[in-house]
Image 1 (spheres, rainbow, N blue to C red):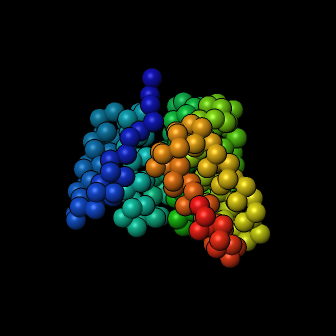
Image 2: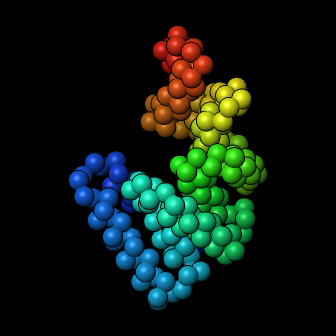
Length: 196
């Protein structure tokens, strides 16, 4: 059974090694090209390479390419595995990220709401992947005028759920708290931001 594609681009980006992102991009582009030639565009492994390339393109600032590869990966996963398969939902998260990076916040919000609803239905509300979908929606909402209150509510929920799911000292919980502090900062609520 397929599993969500791992993403070497994230590790390369976080390492900060000069030139590592470009090397990873070249390797992933070559891998994708070979998979297209040998196993075809709609094979799960080819779709996984599209997903990985979408991340690399975001990190390298190639946002239009990222969006295009995200769309192709998402459509392929949806056709192969179904709309509510966890791997399909992961590609939806990637696509919504690409939309956000291109300031297509309305498209991102719509997709993120659907993804979150499907994650809750398929994986449950108390699941690490569900908190990712919720956090992404909250970040998008914080960029849309008039939706900061809803963003704050979701971010509070993410902080609480990540403590339950991941534990109090997990790095993702601290990231959730930082995102909430940013929302307080956007509202000039500096004391609350500082207290986090």
